[in-house]
Each structure stands twice: as C-alpha cells, then as structure tokens.
Image (cartoon, rainbow, N blue to C red; front, top):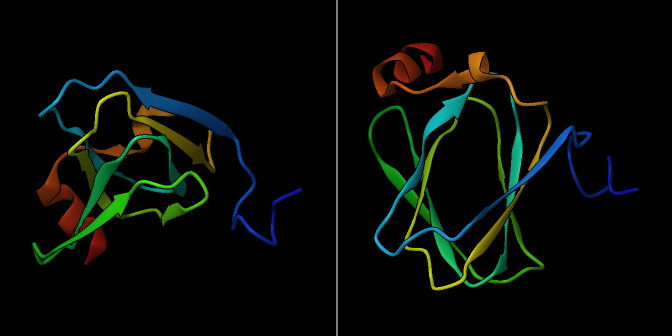
Length: 112
C-alpha cells in the first residue's frame, strides 16, 4: 500500500491523458479540494503551475518513476506533449464537476 508512506492521500480516481495532438493544452483549472499526482508513463509533457500573482513554475515530466504532487487550489495546465505521451493522474476524490475552478479570477479569490 502506497498510502500514506509514498502518496499523501487515498486514491479515489485514476485517469489517463493520451493522444493529445501536438500544440494542444489540457487543464487550465484548479480543484477546490482534490489533490492529484501526475506521472508521465510514456513520452513527456510539461505541467505549468500558475500562482495567484501570475507567476509560473514549469515542471517537465519525462520519467515514469517520478510524479508531481499538485495540491488542491493549484492552477495548472499541461502542454508540450511529445508524440505518444501518456499521463497518469491519481486523484484524492471521485470526479465531481462542482470541484473544478475554471475561471482564473475566481481561483485568485479563493486562494487569497
């Protein structure tokens, strides 16, 4: 069991990102309560974290043995997908569309 020694939450949902065309961006949202770990199972892509003040952190994922922990109330998008990239997402909550924050200004208000 990976929880709690390696993953800081109990996994409630698993999903994959794959077949993303070159130049496309996925994400562009935050979650109110969901935590997530993102892993590049195959290929590579960049996870861009945007802080409430507008600054960015770019994390290049290209090894299947590294994961990026993305806590709740973290704005993110994923870009720069290589050919045949596959991203694995481990989430702390079941899918709930009400948990998504899709407007950056609303995200800034919640993060303040």
